[in-house]
Length: 168
Image (cartoon, rainbow, N blue to C red; front, top):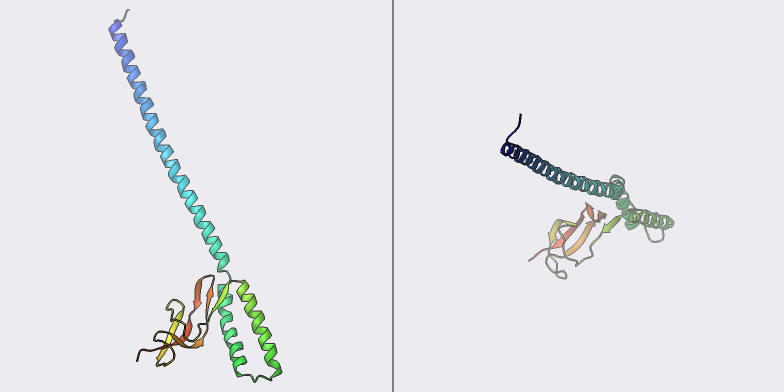
């Protein structure tokens, strides 16, 4: 049985069209998979960066609890220095202990916040306990420090408690 050449050409064209459709479909699927792969790769990279940041922060703030618990020790040693007479032989030991404790804490990222009288009040690092009139300090300036504050690796651990000059 002999087929019509026109029919053969039509069958070949239909087969070519089916192959072209299949190729186009596979190309579209390939592009979709490439795009999905790029999204997943970006997600993995973002997750890696997030984990690195979390590990870095965990290392920076691993001692936060311990250093926070040491703040009352600083306060007690400083109170002892303020109360001790200048000629007391134990005073030198307290000074050395406070100096060594400060050195160790500073090496671990703890920084003291102790504004001087006349410094501007910083609500990010200071807590105003009272407002007092002052003839020598401009309004809004620190008059007195009641308790020093501390910052751990640029994060406020405890604000400095201060009295602020009021506007009369």
